[in-house]
Image (cartoon, rainbow, N blue to C red; front, side, top):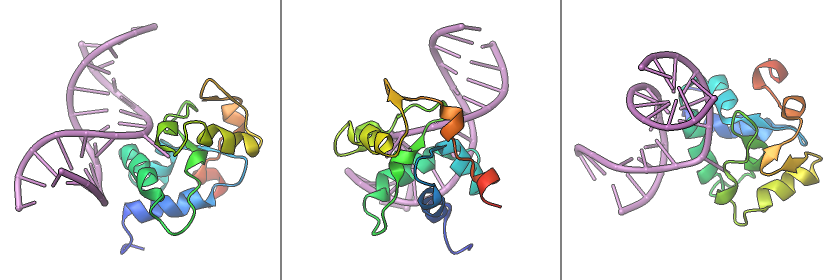
Length: 110
DNA sequence: CGGGTGACTCGAC
DNA sequence: CGTCGAGCCACCC
């Protein structure tokens, strides 16, 4: 939908992330057609709390699997707790077995 | 209304 | 190896 800005598409993709999986800002940015705009994905997450729909922003990490955005949650540990409650192991803000839980929109969505 | 900024990423040096 | 800079676009002041 060209009416929708890149911003709105980010939300759509993030909502599609399956439980127990994570993806990266860059992967989302590339999928919505703005490979250099990974920053905007993070910005979208920052604004996600103002969206009526629930956005699983905790399932979005940076490209190496670090919870860079955890400081933006209401509680610092909330992001980690949510991920762990979905079966993802976190150690020192680093997602363990990141390549196994990584969810690539290009491969999972056709 | 113009400029600064950000939950990132990649390539140079 | 590590550090630095540029690019991207929506939002806030």
